[in-house]
Image 1: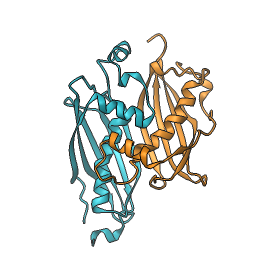
Image 2: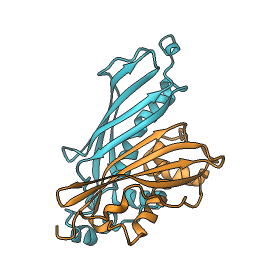
Image 3: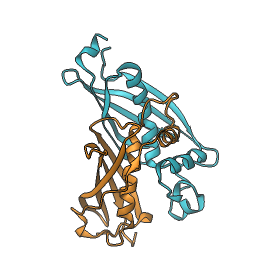
Image 4: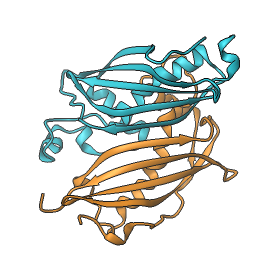
Length: 144
Length: 135
């Protein structure tokens, strides 16, 4: 499979509820109450309860994990980084994060690719410079 | 500056071991909305180790870093290999960057994550933006 820069490899809409934030707090060990308690969040000057940045970061990369499993099982994620630009406010009705993963650059000789992620909530970008470097996309991958 | 300027270069003791158990991985995978059936350990599970390391940093009263004034600005992971169930991981955090950002401070904390054989599995880097007391 030839990878072309600009190709969209995954797009997902992920609903997020306050229950999801509690589940992430328990699973990750991040018990900061700004992700659970509206009163605490507002005391901190936030518009309301916000998702853990790490939850958004975690959700955003899973489509790439699936893409590797489905199309390049020998490959792996070598690097992943994001900047947190805006909080994802999760009100009582919940929120939705839209994720898109697009091929940013390919180095066929090295067997690596950069996948650029976008994450949008309430019409605004919430992660910047969200990039995944995938390694182990061997030259043989073209023939596969 | 909003934090102790002597922070740069400081290291913290290795964290308690974090066991990558099937139960922990399943809970984390559900939380980050991983597909079912599972496709291994979610990459950002490494934050569990870094979180333990950051807890030590945040508990240190000499840093000037106060959670209530701290925002997670940036996060990066570099992986030598995938995390796997059965790994027993520890993290060693050091402060590798510190600079003023107006009245605030940007603190870069790097956690080297090792497995039971002490081989490095991943490096997790957090950039924390610490606001000044007056702000």
